[in-house]
Amino acid sequence: MAWYSLPTRREISIVLFSLTIFVLFYNLESSFQQLQTRQGWVAQGVSKQSGVAASVNWEEELYGDWTLEELQVAKNAQSRHQESVKNSTSLWGSRERASTNFHSEIYGTVGVNDGYIHWNEDLPTTTIIKHVPGSTILDHVFLFNGTVYLVSDDPSFPPVGAIASSTEKPTEVPQSSDWQVLSTEKGREILGRYGGLIHGVTWLCTDAHPSNYTLFSLWRTYSSLNTSLDPADPLILSPPRRIFYPNVPTLIGARPEMNAPILPRQRSPSGFHPYLPKAAFPTLGLMYQEDWQDFASMQAPFLLRRVVVSDSGAARRYKDDVPPFAVPLSQLSASAHWWEPIRRNLASFLGVELEVKKNWIGSQKAVITYLSRQDDPNGPKLREPDHEALVDMLNKLGKNYVVNVVHASTPWKEHMAAILRSTVVISVHGSHLADSVFMTPSTRSTLLEIFPPGTVTRDAELSVRSLGISYIAWWHDKPYNTKSAVTSPAGSNSSEIPVDVAALAKAIHKI
Image (cartoon, rainbow, N blue to C red; front, side):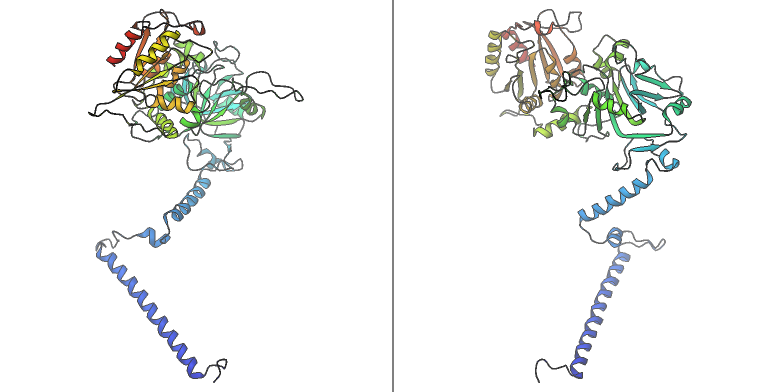
């Protein structure tokens, strides 16, 4: 019989019989496995009274044995879908759905259609969450035609002059074109029935010349919402999404004409190195005067969910015995470790391990960082002979010390990495000492600030003391009590500051 001939009836019967036997026994085996599994459930604890399995892996039975990544993707997709239905704030959404979205926290991922809110007659009212003069946390703030509107019928609402200042005259209370407090009825009339929605936490610095401690002060104000932070805890507050500088242009100088030659322009000073927010506050976007004017020109109200305001003019009008940035440091309660999450952010970005160095007998080594300003063309610096003597003295301290000499021209990454590891920071006075807040906190941590004799400021002192870091103000050959009344440094006029290096060495050995 040839290979290509048709099968006989006998051959077809054998094939069909074999297939039938295979299918039968395969199904029997699967059935027995299922039966054993169910018996295992019963053996593991089915309650005779309730009839409920105590240890059934229902997630595997319902969703299958997916890998962790596949299952997580499915769960995230389902969660986002449910959240988008629940918290939809589309311009065309129902009033009931829109009204549930007034809470200040962020739930899930904000979608591309979540930028509008239809409040109809249920106009959101402004709530004061935390407040001291010049530092305020507000929920539900409106921005419309360049004016900030606060909607409240509460007679105890603080005066707007304690929150913000005039744009044209920062020493005075804001004008009606700057900030207004509206009743609910008046708010409905001015703000209408719907508007844009700006999600997340917004920081607002109204100063035309921000302090080097602006971010530090804003975070302290915001951290007052959590007074129980442990140093090992992660950052549990919702991170700020943006910071507005409505009175600071993006670039310095006049805008060139359209057909004029292209000239490089410098960025406006914002009170910190431009790399710092990207490393320590990675979610924070910077928005300047031009961005604020864009919102004003759109002729539509925008609802900001939560706003943290910093205004130095308001702080000065109500409390002038400390720098404006320091008001929340003393008047708002916070955890003792309130700055630690930000410090850890920076350390992680720079790859700095926050471990204490020890010598061969196990005692802690002191890391001393001298922030030299000798190569800075502007600002104060030591007399050159005193600077050279100080560097020589530091290098001879011995094996129990690690010494870093950081110059003004040192790259930012190396500069901040040295401060993060420091036990003691030494430098002449100046705004650059704002970086000292990133020092390693310990019982020995100390900032030693050198002043011209007869002058002193308290900015650096108040900031580091709020973190539990010791502080020494140094005049030539002795420390000085900063609480005594003295004049402020003359800035760049005090360019040749004397210091007794021998006396300074004795003070370092006592730390």
